[in-house]
Image 1 (tube, rainbow, N blue to C red):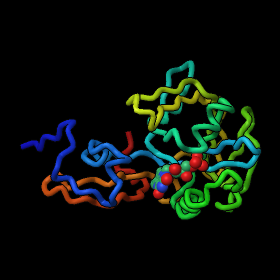
Image 2: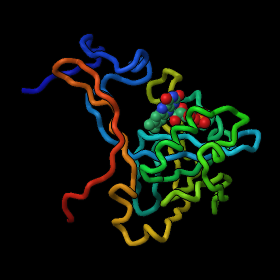
Image 3: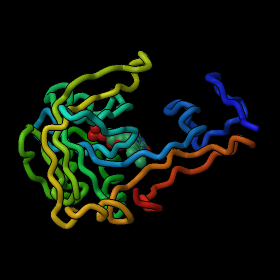
Image 4: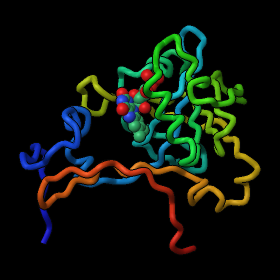
Amino acid sequence: MKIEIGKDFPKFFKPLYQEEFELFSHFETTAGIPTVLFAITTWKENGKPNVCFHSWSCFHGDKTAFFAVMGNLYQHTHTYTNIQREKCFCINFLPISYYDKLIDTIHQNDLETDEFEVGNFTLSQANVIHAPIIQEAFINMECTLKEVQDLSGAGITAMIIGKVEHISVDEKYAQGYERYGKDGFMMLIPAPQNILTGEPNQSAIASVNIEKYD
Ligand SMILES: Cc1cc2nc3c(=O)[nH]c(=O)nc-3n(C[C@H](O)[C@H](O)[C@H](O)COP(=O)(O)O)c2cc1C
């Protein structure tokens, strides 16, 4: 038997915190699909470096180009404004050990704040775009802005598509499978709802556990 959830908000879904379903679709917690967590780095208008902890994205391309599709960036963020102005951004993949530092950059987020200082991150210049990069990241992905689209049309979030122009990989992660497990990609499991009772669950932070090789 399948439990059917439609586009009308299921009245028995309880939020984990008051504004949960003001921020997120009930389909997000119905499915609970994991996506990779990373930091977007950009320059603020005043020249201070900005860090935005982010997820809700995918990465793919064909032989001619590779894209970072950030499906759901809030339009009220500095990052959204910075990307529109600079037409570029860097994506920095960090392991779970940096989670708390990345959360600090959410709580100290003023225009005047140097968010690299807040996170205790080492700033380097990107290779081919005008953006700061986090030296501690095991992969830095430099992107130019390809497209912005407000998928829902509600003026709340936007899909930002970046064309990947350059990738830097830490030599300690260069042989392949160091990029998984607890020192590798950090994943977000977004608050999977109990579909039977409507009870909420917390979000979880996960790593990738390899089950099989192909
Ligand atoms: C795991 C996770 C937790 C987040 N928690 C919050 C939060 O509590 N409050 C919030 O406004 N944004 C949260 N965000 C979204 C952005 O990280 C946050 O809005 C960010 O500080 C925007 O940065 P900017 O304005 O410098 O671009 C979260 C993102 C992730 C991936």
